[in-house]
Length: 337
Image 1 (cartoon, rainbow, N blue to C red):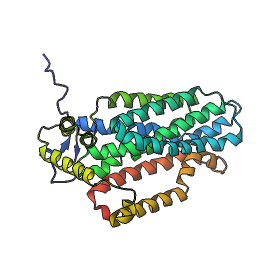
Image 2 (cartoon, rainbow, N blue to C red):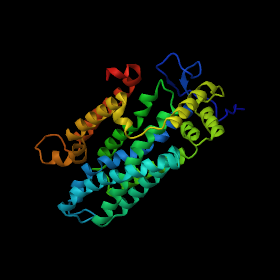
Image 3 (cartoon, one colour):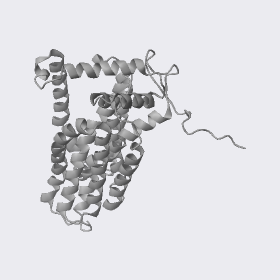
């Protein structure tokens, strides 16, 4: 008779950590359940990446006589703008939800919103419904891009926090690549179904995941925080790390941060300037516009290569660069970047 293997056994799917000295088990191997946790929490970024790149292969199809949605060129710019405007609305919502209902529930809210966006876009038969779907997608995307890195950083060990935190951005780029691959060849409805299915899978797999121990300690739910940490580390020997997290949270409670601290504290000013410069360089480089309009740009160029194929090659290199950066992040000193 075949031997029944318990479901909670650590199966042979592991990820080796780069640091030698850490609080992890002596094997320094990441069990499959943790890999599932990180993938589940960032899976929504795959769907949001599809939304970010959706306009590139879909806009040329919307302008065809056979398009299911009769749309003028005047609406085209708003298909992109409403997605970005949604991101602005999502910022305030994210700040409120993060500490009000927790990291986990906020991610689940974003998953539901993203699913709703795909449904609205899939069934849209008027430009206004299409714009509504894009607006909802923008709100969901902003909530995800802020909340998921926070959640992953709070549940990860410091030795791999940087690389795992970048998972959401890798998945976003993979999502853009995915919509570039399928968008030109299947219907708008079927593209929406693919995105919606990803959201359903993410929602169902993430329901059983633990809340961030940092958030639970912020809400003075110590026993729940300890249980969460035990699940995350797959070990009952978490007292040292639990004490470290508790001290960190208590320090934050004793000395709450203020908006002015961004400018009055030297290290904060430095971090703020680096963030502003890097984001400004990315935005003013036109990367966002390029991702959203790449096929349209290529349609206006004479080339022997198909305009639907070049965007795929472009995103393959972007994905490779993202993965490379994630692996280097924790193996080299942060100051080297």
